[in-house]
Length: 122
Image 1: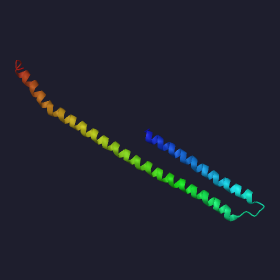
Image 2 (image 1 turned 60 degrees about the vertical axis):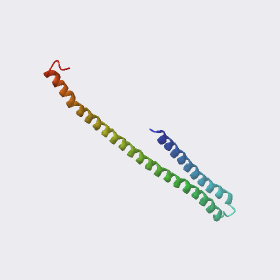
Image 3 (image 1 turned 120 degrees about the horizontal axis):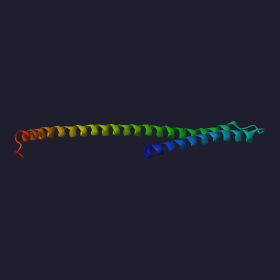
Image 4 (image 1 turned 60 degrees about the horizontal axis):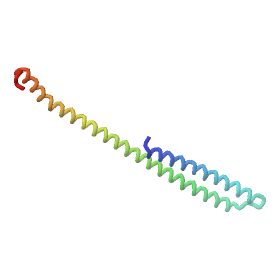
C-alpha cells in the first residue's frame, strides 16, 4: 500500500470520527434544550436553531468527505493509467531487445558457418 493510500485511509477515519462526534453533539444539543426548557415551555425556535447549526456542520463534513472520496477515486484512476503505461513501455522494450537479438543472430550464424567451412579462417 502506498504512503498516499495510507494517508487517505487515515483521513477517512478521522472524518468518520468527526461525523460521529457531530452527530453526538446534535443529540446532546437536543437533550440540553429539552432539559433547559422543560417546565418553561421549551422554545421551539431555539431548538430548531440549534439543530439547524448542527445539521449545517454535518453537511459541511459530509460534503468534504464526498469531495475527498472523489479525489481518491480520481487519483486511483491516474495511478492505474500510469501502471498501464509502464506495462506498455515494458512490452515495447522487450520487443526491441528481441529484435536486436534476432538482428545479431544471422551475423553470428554466418560467422559460425564460415568458421566451419574454413577452419583456418579466423
